[in-house]
Image (cartoon, rainbow, N blue to C red):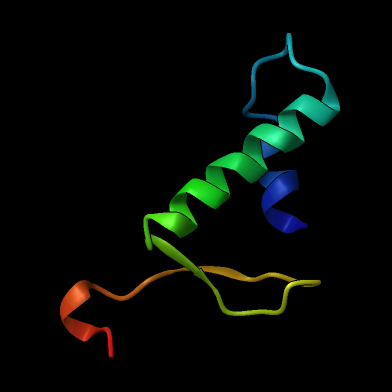
Length: 58
């Protein structure tokens, strides 16, 4: 996933590769639950994008 490659190097060095990926996925999940981002792709090939402001949501 592109977002993984982008953010994995920004994680603390003390974390293992798997811990870094878990941390990134947890952050994405939290953002999705807060409706800050939405998946414009599929479950297999997600494409995370910023959601529209509340007044533009249907």
